[in-house]
Amino acid sequence: MNTKRSFQNARDVMTKKVVFVDGMATAKEAVEIMRSEEAEALIVKKRNPQDTCGIVNVHDFIKGVIIPDKTSEEVNVFEIMTKPAISVPANMDIRYVANLLVNVGVRMAPVEENGEYIGMVSLSDLILDNILF
Image 1: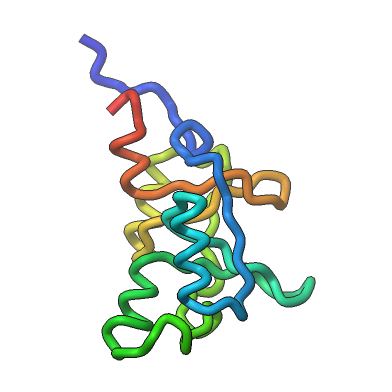
Image 2 (image 1 turned 180 degrees about the vertical axis):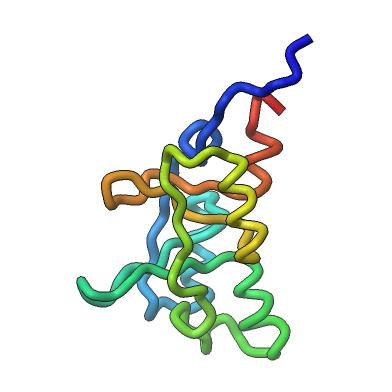
């Protein structure tokens, strides 16, 4: 019986869809994009070349809209996003991806290759979408 698993990297388990949103979008607009694109998170676009991307997910909407009892129309994405978005290299071993996400306290991160986001990886991807698990 082989007790060693085959090497897998972020590219092997990532979701290939990356969806972007402008930081000035309202929380309502962002959620509408998430619904229509069936995305768990959105990458918040850079405002200028020296800027960095952010990320917004359901947790941010709960924390920034629901709990403080605001409406989704009065909150902009830039107010509730996590920035900078922690990204992982496409060739990073999933053990290190898992360790990074857990230690940083995020559930999802963009996967980066050659300076571009090529997908998204989440903690659930590491288990539920992992055919070797």
